Image 1 (cartoon, rainbow, N blue to C red):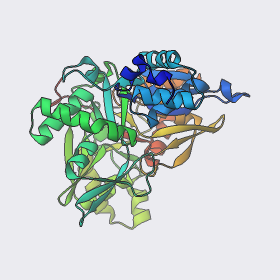
Image 2 (cartoon, rainbow, N blue to C red):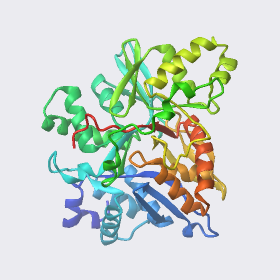
Image 3 (cartoon, rainbow, N blue to C red):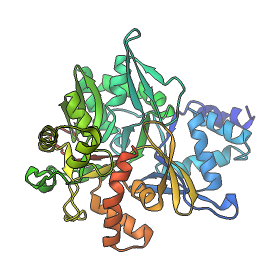
Length: 411
């Protein structure tokens, strides 16, 4: 290790545990010189534009758990010259909300209400003989990660719908323990889940206050508007199995589905899903199919995606982004890693920016406005891109759709 890292100041840094925050949004520009390329890291509420060197330094946070380790790696790889430069990057990244220390003082530490936490990865189920669950992440692991029941429950509870402080409340309720105990459990699991790519931490500031007490415009769930050719989309996030049922998180509730209901719900993540198309593709009884979809609409787990309704003012959903971007192939095609396989998938420029500006705590109209500005197009053109893009991103596993209700969320 460099002598600088052994200095008295760096000795203190070796005990400073930290985590990189934000989604990796990949390479934003392609210049003649690679050194001039720009990269995006962060979230809707805080996009940090980094130079090629800045991004390389930031990426080393994945391989380190302390400031000292981070400095050692960066110096050995020739990314920085000395500890003073490391401290410059620490200040820069913390000010941009893409780096945090995780020695939180207490459960009421204000920073816990400024960041949210979202799970990545996919559960491959329970290994009966081991009584362990296998999880894969956006950083593929050949054998996946084996988890005990408590680890599995805590990992899958990070739905992305809550601030860290609210999430600790969820742990407290789940374990039937005090907030102090839940706080200790959270801080114990945080480093591993984060470094393994199983959790993403994002800065949200006070955006979580945008959640409304109502579910929005009911016509998106009006079964009287449903016909066999209606385009339909699934809403919610898979929580996992509970006995013979599969639990879906919608707002602050967990809704149980039987296997057949769950199968239909997953089919509505496929582009161009409609009663007619599902019936033709899977030879299902059309009356049974319509009955199940009607039931799921009443539970607000499926919505109508009608071209006749305004997304800017009427749509009751928000987009929850998943995965990481790894840059682009050409000026018009980007790539993004999905949460299920961790494989990079090509997406258009429009899809990329919809994904960049997706945020669980903002209305679709805010995402629409941001897309209009960055692509320099009209609101009407942006709405058409979003209307076409959301089903594609949903199918690719890069987003889920959510509705926010504050009924049982503790501030």
